[in-house]
Amino acid sequence: MVQGKTIAFAAVCVVAASAILISSGAGARSGAAAPSVPASTWNARAAATYLDQRQSWWESWPKSARDHGTVCVSCHTALPYALARPELRAILHENDATTNERKILADVTTRVRSWSEVKPYYGDTTPGGRTKAIESRGTEAVLNALVLASRDERSGVVSAEARQAFANMFALQQTAGEDAGAWTWLNFGLRPWEARTSVYFGAALAAIAVGMEPQNYAKSGDIQPNVERLRAYLQEHVDQPLWKRVLRRDDPQLFNRAMLLWASAKLPGLIPPDEQQSIVATLRDAQEPDGAWRFTSLGHWRSDASESADAAGDGLATGLVAYALEQAGSRPNEQHVVRALAWLASHQESATGMWRAWSLNKQRDPATNVGKFMSDAATAYAVLALSAAAPSSRVERTARDSKAEADLLASHRPPLRQ
Image (spheres, rainbow, N blue to C red):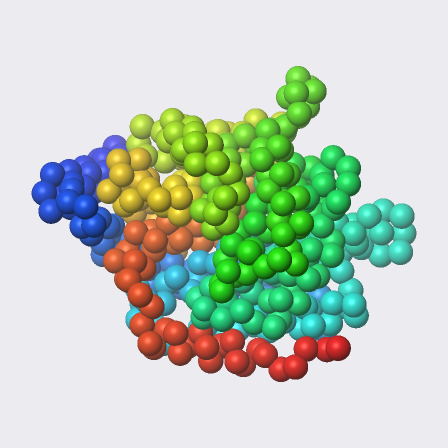
């Protein structure tokens, strides 16, 4: 334990020293390149191997299977994989998307094109089943749009299937009631992805998707009423109502703020600049002395199953908050980001390539496949944060990468169903 703390402290000192040297020299000049966490301080190949293996398992798990030969886009494994795995290409000098990436895109495209025919992820004809079907439809519509928008953002082309996915999504946006502007979201009591408070998480993902879609899609005239409803919801519901707080219900205060900060970086004008800076300050204040964040400290959770396990921080909270800060404009040499990246670089497991995180809901065996779900998300968000700080992520995409994305886009673009 002492040796681990020494290594972590040394990593912080090395990165912090680099930041100080650069900020006091050429890096302090306007427009100078910011320092980054060298790829050698974390194992990108091991992270990619872990993510690939976990997504392959998820696609082969019978409980993940859905109709039309598709697989569920899970919030803990598949969605983070779809967002993070492409970011490793430049670091690993890969020329093409992985087989797993292609499978996710193929599944999403199939379900978007056959939206009126495919069965919901969950639900049946019973009263409870109908509720789950409605929740499932709203959730999937947002996830489909985000997966395709992420692909389109890299290619720079608005795809026909993404437009259809957004049409499906906005058709299910709530227009009245407490959650007007958001989407009905799956509630299995599984924090933070599929619980009563996860409606906000889903709305933030929708805003990120809209902002990601290229060619000024967010300014399209036909979606402005939808965007305005979404903006109002995100601004007004970042905190739980007072009565829920009095009753000590779940209140993901900082988790919601991290998601809102990320969304505001993708969708300009989502919140005022002073509110964005206030969120940045609040998230920085919650950082642990060693540079990490703890997921249990990102809100009040009625279940404290992981409170002792993540007392020293976890990869999911640290990766998510660090990435949100980066997306909102914090440079890699900003002291809070420096400390977060150093913590991430020193807490990747050498044997597995992953970062650890723990369930908020129950004690799970970390050696089991289900017990790794939160670590799947932790690894993906850690990769997003570390990749964003890598020099290769801050330069123009090469012709090779653009061609790979264009080829991937073309491979999933037959005519839409009329």
